[in-house]
Length: 199
Image (cartoon, rainbow, N blue to C red; front, side, top):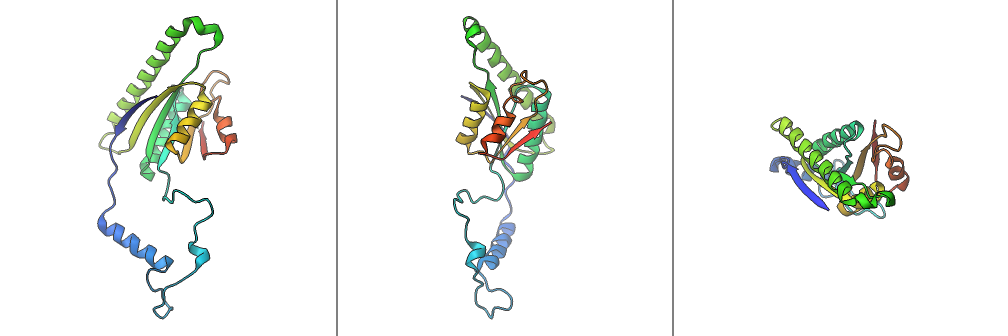
């Protein structure tokens, strides 16, 4: 797997804001006396108990995975995912899955492999160019990943490895022709992550 990082770290909240949030949370869960309680801390076990199976405990998504194959819809999906990542302070992971070879094209394996790597390089260059255009306007942490394999399996594996909170892909423009479009329904049916399909 090839990984490239880019983007900029988002500005952290100020200490004053953090302190205000901590005070507000403390009052809500019993860390500070509530009004009309006579100084006794509020206590409502049902209101503060974590749901069964709760793990991450984060406020908003930490990682958003976007599938990119060079089609217009996949670029729109990547742009949409970038907007989500910027607003949520998430890491944007952009993935290009290099198609596996069919048996009929095995003899041309080296040529096909070189071609798919060239596509990956072109997509990365386009991402860097897009980042440069908006530099100074907004910032987002992002990384570009590329692996070889079946598109659905590749995206699912990356989503699991990154512990992605959301997956964003483009809708198929021509059925059977675009890599990402052919796996959108399978990602949704897998039911393992929230999936957004961008037209």
